Image 1 (tube, rainbow, N blue to C red):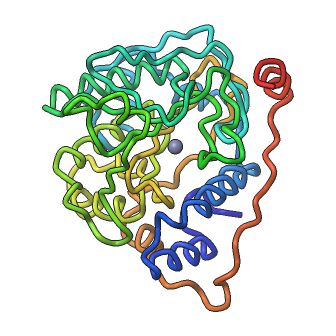
Image 2: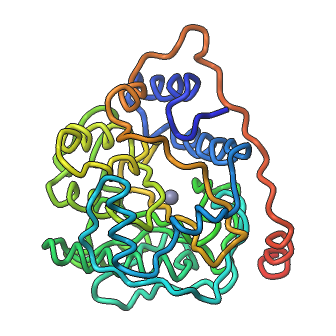
Image 3: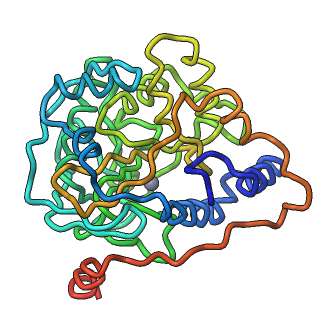
Length: 330
Ligand SMILES: [Zn+2]
């Protein structure tokens, strides 16, 4: 079993191969299948909400948010829009699920611009829209430009399909945030044919990994609504070097190394309390994930395991989703 997102020997092997040939981005197809297999690999650990999860997912007040952040070893300083519940419902996991009653993120806001990798990918759970609005408020306070938003979910969620690199984004609580800003404002053609801005390439930090990007990643992760954020292993390592010896570094725990993610971070929120059929992923391991854990992503592959690749498991949608998606998408 893949131990959450800690680098297993097999995965390290694949990553090391990618690093060795300097073609991390070219490993993208492998990356999506790894994410997919890993997302399904937690089937032994998945849990629907228990009373303790309900408590930890209480986003009803700023005080509660501060307490959650404090308990996890960081400080939450951002604006916080309390979540009091909605008619939106999530079924299943981000890797095999759907959403009823999603909300559309408007492209008309001054503070955001939406990339259009394809049509109709700008829907999410209301909790996500609150998170993004609050993230923009906070980053604006810190002097950062308007944000660029990548893919969210489709109107009813569900898988993006075989041809997509997305192994998740099924339930409206995932968003890709490019390491780029909407300044200068992008043209319609720049939004429909987005250009990736890489802040690392393999093990090399790029000049595009600016102070603004560093602050952006830290701010995005320092929010109690966030379950985890996937970034390239070198990004995690760099953030560790910058923050592991500082106070209140608990946000580092939420930064999870994963293949790809050199030009964007993938933010995943926790299940909202009023979607009891939303399937949570196993919690991230305790600790910052710095030191050996992140370094293990850069170790050479174990002997004779070069071809060992986790077998892709078939993802099974909850019956409710299968019916919902069949009636509306097919
Ligand atoms: Zn993503």
